[in-house]
Length: 423
Image 1 (cartoon, rainbow, N blue to C red):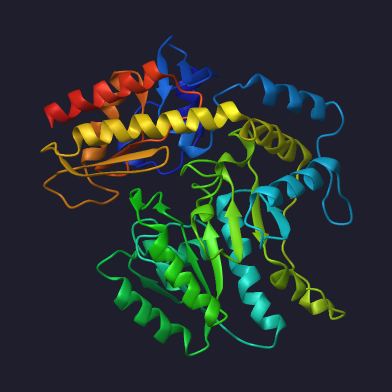
Image 2: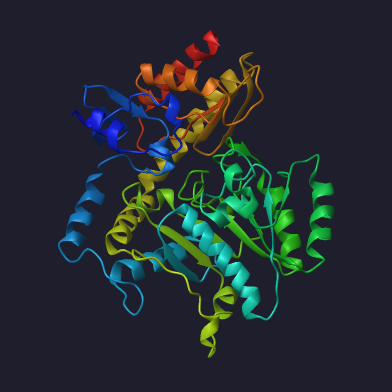
């Protein structure tokens, strides 16, 4: 049997409609902004390998650092033990995170980083002798596929089968100039009953929800209300962290900083699964007690894995280089120019951009949603032209690694214009 035949026989792939599953593309190697398959085809990685790859595939600096760490040791338990990569990574992350962040808790991925944050918030109040079971989140949110993450996410196709088991959450609309006054009043009413544990949000950009974008100044107003009413705020920066929005973190655009921040995806430059939940000192202090029942009973076998932490440290080396930010700025400017060029196209319902993320929402007879049938048409067209894009229904986007060339960006823009002309 070939690899693809064995793949069909033995493997269950994520987010895949099994009845209509076609033949998967078998990747043999990757370098820079490109994938190469087993048939000799080359693809531009337009979405950073599901948003995780920051600096390009098979980066020599990250490769070298990983080899050096593997030759030392590959893993150790992280309860009662520690090691240099985990400690150094925590220290370096805190230098870039908002100044109110003081502690780093390690986990395995974005969903678990969110799960940790939700549990921290709930137990924070329990440890203080208060029961606050309610969370507030945005409509259209996506915070992962664990039960806590599904609960605070939009109730939709991602979690319909589990809805009866999800805990209570109040979902409010994304803020904008038209609704901010009403939202402020609604939020003030919600938090005054003293049962709200936390408000969780994806700052500036909702990723899996269709790359919906909103302004920091309106989010700031909502966070301010939470601060005044002692409601914990949680920023899910799993997708928006590490330069995606044009700053190191999307929270850097905010005047009022979140109490807890969740990180993953680009954290290791796309090399290893790793999650981080950072928090303010007052959150941590609620778990410091002679009462052992106030311990934060959460952990994973691979918590603080030294190889994953080493990959993240190597990625941080590159994030702290000037040329990375030159690359980010170049992508932003190119996106801005292209957006201005196509924004009035009749085939487009909406085109929007935040930092290195450019999203195009097609006009279709169906409403905009994840299962919109335009998805297959979009993916097939761009794949045929050597561009890897994974649409969110009728929304497709360009979110490239920072090393992408002018030529590849222009090639993608040209193919987009051709696709729009056909639509």
